[in-house]
Length: 451
Image (cartoon, rainbow, N blue to C red; front, side, top):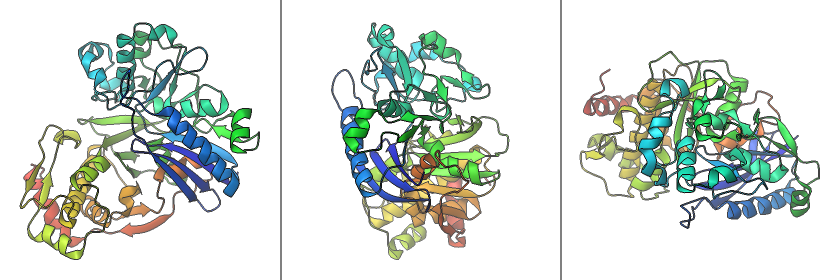
């Protein structure tokens, strides 16, 4: 198994990555925007558009490289309800659709306690249990039509192999459906009437089978091309380090979401908006997540250039600071966003630096919330943001390692085929910057955090 095609369904983009296990790197990446369809019955994902993109991409990769195996990783908070024939009983809900909020009071009476599930109460459809509850409530015949519930990576694995399954990293991703301390389904599954409809649980690295004959023919694949069960994307980022590193350590997976995961963390009382994920080994994993990438893109108006030295000096000299907004995490969720100091022009280099510092400081706070210890490794898009990395290292008081993978989840998913303990290659290690120490102190003081 040398060349693995990884289907990576992110919230912003759908990606198909060709990973070389010999080199531990991505040989090629194809992308497609993950644009939801604003059409009845509610805003939902374009599964058929994604499917054609996946098939076309597999054919391209087979022609260019040869595909030895296929792995799937996806964002969390999604699942597929299949009818008896194996078709979608209803489209896959975009978890940002506000529909589930319309029956929030009824759902809150059903959901288990955070102490049992490690799942915080989240808006819209970010709790998979809330999605299913709302879907059943708005369509009285749906529960009867639903024969099988699949977690999202396994929906795509099912389309490739015809085998129905779930994995615990996806069930354990703020779904309300899983008890991480017990390794079992939560009582909510029985209350929703789906306890016997949830597909069999498999390890993420289990081989479900070869691709279906029609898939092999369509893409030019070998008839025996294997497909693994698949894994939740943040846990895919964590997986190489679980294999290669002793605890304690932390992984920060970045993209639309910034997800902070601690292995071997100090015991802490649960803090607001933290959660307990379940890692690929089936163990509870304390985590925090917030929409860092979405916030950066919104506030910088999609700026792609690298800020210059003058922008960095302006932020420092004028003490330009962004203070926490509703997309932040933990104790900051209720605070309105505000600028301290002269507000920079949207899309400017000064704005990009200040927003990078802000998101790095939130990330450092998240690491502290879950009692993170040991080395910090950064995956994904912010691993290429030098300002964010310098501020994170300074705020945490220790060097931060950044990986060179453009798609931090891809190698972890590919390693489901060959778990040889190889982590992502470290492109750089960024030390704390003494010049930023005062900025950290002033920012924390502005929001009431004392050393």
